[in-house]
Image (cartoon, rainbow, N blue to C red):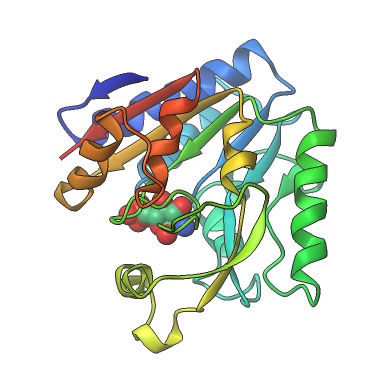
Length: 235
Ligand code: GLP
């Protein structure tokens, strides 16, 4: 694992945006994996700026998001559909038909999840996957557990995740208790992965990841078994 320590959030955001821009430039029809949460917001802003300057073209790109709450309509401002539109998609020329995010209102989550993995396969796999990390070490919504699920699946959120994500909602009661998330296997199939971690509260999870050991109670540590991972972090 390559480890990059940044002096601040701006430097981290610039690094992530530059890696995405380089991927698009070297392969205009690349498949990108996007993440949500507060960490990638700065990188998405920089990608928008690069797009505005005519430096990158998303017209042939395909994207897959890691996860979505369940149930939640795409119009809900806390949905990851809404987040991606606000922070990136409505500002760039990524065709709507090329955007994939798990459907938060599906009546058949198991089928939606199965088809999501199939869609990733059909697109040729993810060239570059961005990940944030939960305070408890979760990636996507793969929560700490004695065993981790491989494929995209419906999962329950831990109380700790509900508590940390409640900052975006009016109250903890409003946080959906479930999510549809790419599984660990779906994530590990990406050709390259960048995990971005920002803030003191993520340092325990970063330390666990840096230890090189794999422990399913800190789900991000499975990335130690992937051949092309960059961890970029700042306090
Ligand atoms: C959510 C998402 C994760 C994300 C995490 C951290 O739980 N499902 O993909 O990494 O939040 O978010 P933040 O960057 O806001 O700390």
